[in-house]
Length: 305
Length: 318
Image (cartoon, rainbow over all chains, first blue to last red; front, side, top):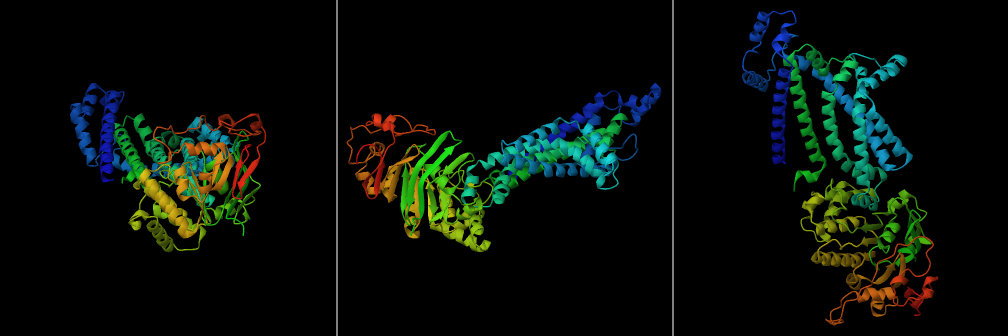
């Protein structure tokens, strides 16, 4: 188990290092940063001054290791636009993004687990096909479109939920639903497939031969085994939701990390862009590690003899 | 008093296309080991699963009479049946490697049976599980209770399955080829164990096997199945001494008996395989493979009695 953890940790560090390098290279590839920071009306002298002030005149490798060294100590630099520490900017907006991501994940699980179980228990019936059809539709629906439709129906016509902002918990429900829709199809199908496989297994026949109740057979014996791949994918989906909420945060005017990233790209505020990419990547890697750990908790065979 | 288990004219078919069991009748008395023998695919396991009402979805079961301790099972609700299963009638299976849930400890899987069917504490259930593990010959039962199935060998898992089946003191134990998947040395241990338990606890046992050596050692009574029918049924000694049905004779010829067959004599075999039989089939299902078959075998076959406790299904006279 310890060996397993150490191995995972080494992989995580390698992934983070790769992402850092890529984030650094990609922001430099977008053009001469000094020119874009100085603005369209700047003279050659202005550009050179900016280049000197931001340290962009140094060799790329020096710039890179300078950034990496500071990032390792938690210093992600200063935003060119907001003139504040990047870590403070991200720290302020992270709770919104995390709340949104968790809301999306909880809604997704609340929908896809029962649907998947139901479809598996009623395998090859009309109900099963309807569930699979809904999952397919969910996958095909663009999230910005679904967001607008929900705003019109739930927000404007019915007036049940606020349509933008972050004032109360109700503000997170609609964007949470939209975010959940991207994860529901995969989670539902995975739950269904896992349950069908588990229900056909020998240990479920044993559980029935023991005279256990239907609830115990389904939820204790079958779901426990069917849930193993679902947990792994759910953790990865949460990573996608945190990083991929840029569109949703736009549509619902939630000023989270996704919104910050979008603003900063437009303003060529590259320390912020680099830092957001890095932070999201680290969270993503951490979540896959959490998924592995939860798998080991759920599946004793992974814990070794 | 009625027999422990009465199965009369059991029929099982899958989706109306394949008749897996065709009018099989088996009776298990209290404290008796009744062996069900036959080739693979002859309906032994399906008969057992039908008795337990554990057939896969799509299987249809019907019987003139299917009763446990005189109580009719065909009209019993799912939950009524669930209260009997694991309780008064228990079953162990052929595949010890996959029959235990990989996600739960041995202890948790054993105690849940008792807690389902009896009012008891977790502590008392754990004590009972430890006692039974010791009884089936597992050393350090306390350690095993905390382990997961993947940490146990096949022989140990089958012992756990047996101990688990005994948790509620069942009156009937159905064992579906309990030793087939195990090493020969372990097979003998498990068989001795089952025979001992059967004797000590006075269990009625329906033992499904294709191994006639096992039958000879532990069976009180034998029913030979072929293509979903019981073609011959007799007390063990009588069946071995005086087999009547050509299929039974063929089966017995396939088993080498030291001292009885000569070294240069070829071992017998029955050519062909068990046919798949659909609804509306008439006559003897064995006729394609039988040396004595003639035109009359395509018609309804009478059941003959060779003695009071010995009957067989063949047109040939007793």
